[in-house]
Amino acid sequence: MIPTLAPLFQGGFAHYGERLRLAQPDDPALPLTSLLDPAVLDAQLQAFRSNFAQEDPRAVLSIWSKYYFLYLVPPVLAANLILQRDLPLDPHAMRVEMDPTGLPAVFVFADEGGPLAPPLYGLDRFASLLQDNLAFMIDGWQQRYGLSGKVLWSNASRYLRWFVQELSRFGLPEPMWAPGKSLLEAKAYADGTRNPLYQAYVERFRRDDGEPLSVRKLCCIRYLLPDTELCEDCPRLCHS
Image (cartoon, rainbow, N blue to C red; front, side, top):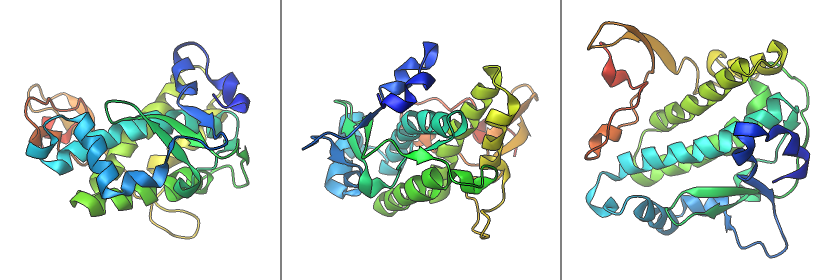
């Protein structure tokens, strides 16, 4: 756990604290950028899905990427929104410990980061996460297997949206979590750069009962893998 972030990780959220740590001298963790190396990435996907060689690699990568987003996004957003702390998220300065199933277990940081720089509202507040880290990693992964970057951004949107909603349910003051709404609601950064997460969710109607449902615009294509159910927010559950 990173000491300055310890106040965040209490109760049911405690396990996320173990997902982050500071680098040590001669740290054995892999450089985070190694997850863009074809040999390293293939090995992790093979550990993740034992039948990887016989399955659609795009679908395997898509599901695997969700764990990357799930383990990285919540603690990083918590530091940003609750402590107003900006972590050093450049992949070239980070390392990662992988578990035996090929998933990222611990993200390793060079230092504890520092206070967020203004502005504290709008999409630019999250540039370290979105532009420094996610954009770089997503671009590398889509080049490896031809998986659409839009699908990967859609996967990331799931956990960004979920965690901001969770913070609102925790009873925290609205000014603390409300800036996170810009992640999916802002069209662009201050310089005009398009937000790839903009309106990642849409309102549709379920095919089976006609009930309204918020779903991602894009399916994660997990349906291409055998014996794999659709996500509960999959657009394939709904009428187009």
